[in-house]
Length: 247
Image (tube, rainbow, N blue to C red; front, side):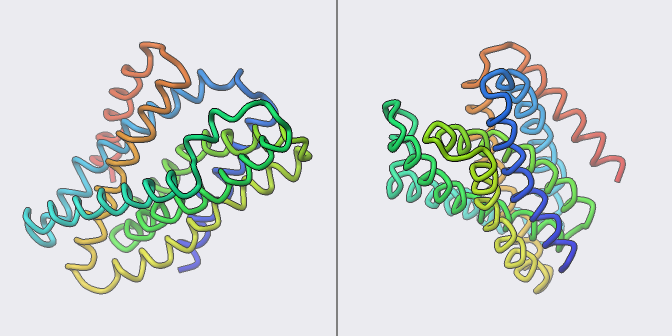
C-alpha cells in the first residue's frame, strides 16, 4: 500500500507540480519538446494497453467481460470529463481575456477541474499494481509525463493573475492529490479476486485509451504541428513492446 501511495504521489503531485514549474520558468519555449514527449508516452501507452493489459484481462476472464469492462472504463472517464468541462466551464477558461483577476480565477478553476480529472488516473495506477508491480511503476511514470502539460496549463494563468511563482507551483502540485486517493481505491478493487483484477485491468485499458486519443495526442498536436509527433508515437509503441517482452 505504501508503494502505491508513493507512486501515485510521484505521478500525480510531483508530475503536475513539475509541469507547473516548467510552465513558470520556460513557458512556450518548452511546448515543442513537451509535444514530442507526449507523443512518445502516448505510443507507449497504446502498446501497454493493446499488447499487455487487455491480453491479461482476457486470460483472467474472457473476451466479452474484457470488452464490457473496457467500454465501462471509457464511458466513466468520458462522463467525468464531460461533467468537469460543463460544471467548471473548462473550455471557456482557454478563451478568457487577459485580465489579472479573471486569469487568477481561471487558474483556480483549472486546479479544481484537473484535480477531479486526476482521480481516475489514480484508479488506473492502483489497478495495475494489483496485477503487477512493474506495470504499476511503468504506468506511474507515463502518467507523470501526461501530467506535465496539465501542470503547465494551470500555472500560467495563476502567475498571469499575479500569484507568486512559488504559490502557483504549490497549488498546481495540490491538484495531483486525487491521484493518490484513486490509487488506493483502485488497488482494493483489483485485489478482490481474479475477476476483480480482470475488471481493473480492462477498466484501466479503457481509461488509458480515452486519455491517449482524447487528451494526449490532441494536446501534442496543439502544442506543435511537427511531423515528429507521428514518428514518436510509433517509436513509443516500439519501446512499449520492448518493455512488455522484457519483463
